[in-house]
Length: 410
Image 1 (cartoon, rainbow, N blue to C red):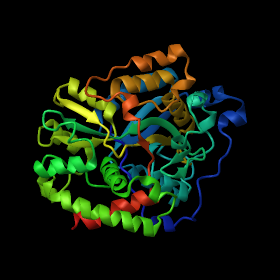
Image 2: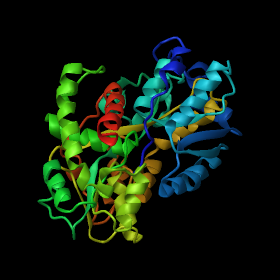
Image 3: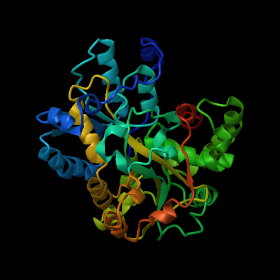
Image 4: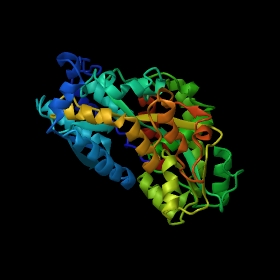
């Protein structure tokens, strides 16, 4: 499914702030006042303003329906604030900090990860130290590197996990064979034989950025050469120069001859649904089955993981340091980790659970195992058989900027 587009705040804006790590962790209200009941009591009557990507209507329906109803039972009103770019929410919090509005902020919760989380950490924008206090944190494996670090940035209690994203190639099996989708090289070879039938969104679109990193991993032989939290100029220069040559070479075979690229993943999916392209990369393979069932995608739609592997990450929610309804935000973060909510998210939106299913009882785990997302969707065991980690946020920012200069503006 689409996830928030990653954009960094400007260096000039950050220059107005003292460089620092995340906000200092402090005990949550439940620790100071004696329990989760105190948080629930404070949250009753509050409205949580959740700023999140609003381009996925299936997810929007889940949020404004199922999830909002659950919060209503707890006396909390959920207001979904739909945004296109996560940076809009982060900039709003930054502007309030610069204006000295350290209480009563307008943003209560943000769907955030990657570069924007790192930027907010540097600017001291996040409330920290509450994630393990959430009752449903009992279902989270905090030792999992994908939970402990967000695109290489230590989470340090400053955000709470809520969904898992995995990459896959979606393709029309009436147009491509299994051999065509074995690897990046075979896919590019097919594209050259069938010009105009493949494309990817322009970075910094979240999925477009993943597509370029997939091609980079394939070119460099995996992500290990680009390890670490800062850019290794020598290793990056060697790998990226070969990548740009490769992407420039295939560009004339892409949709519209590579002269332009779709601005977002929703545009790519529209092209596929309209029959204008035959294959695309996704971060939301679980949602494909519903699109096939509704007739948006053809019945011949299938998925695969290219030989380079599946790039996976977790999505998080973060509470701004000045959130006006902080207690309600914690209640929402806790609800997102409830097994019933995770199951409904998986069943209706095809979003893979972020909780550790091994921590559930057999009876609790059985409904997850029984979810059938349709023949178009890869079983989770096949999808995650060769999972690759994300690069650090510093690399992601650099790759996106260099792709624009070297490929888009070639």
